[in-house]
Image (cartoon, rainbow, N blue to C red; front, side, top):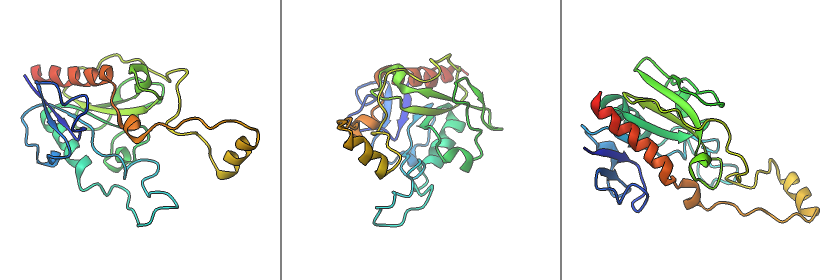
Length: 206
């Protein structure tokens, strides 16, 4: 039995598993034609809170301009079964008509395709920050995850809301908190990976 892992890091947590057909950057996951159930991590840069690139962006960005990656991942999950992961508050949810899950947790119906969605903190599963995440699953058992905010963890960034707030905190002599690196932010903890793989593998028996 195998699972297709779409849009994953070449040397990430999926690459060493012999039952996983991993689609890293050297393979175009949009060409995945099944029939394996999938765990999909489509790119989120153009779907997140900072999809425009921010005020310092040198080129104009467009919301949802990911080359069709999310659409292909959504199609794969709906067609072959499995689960898709994206950051909390992803603009892809309303863009594709998916119901937003409650922050407190729990699975809810997402659409008319038999999909379900939930919000879960990867911090409960070993991530160095909260990393609130939305899941979308089709044809899978829906596990009872650890719901709610994971206590005592860092944000993905320093958490300032403005330059003035940053300056005020610095003037008080507060040392800056170390930001997570890009690699740390993208990292999928092994326990969380295993939850997603177990869901996809169980869809084989549907």
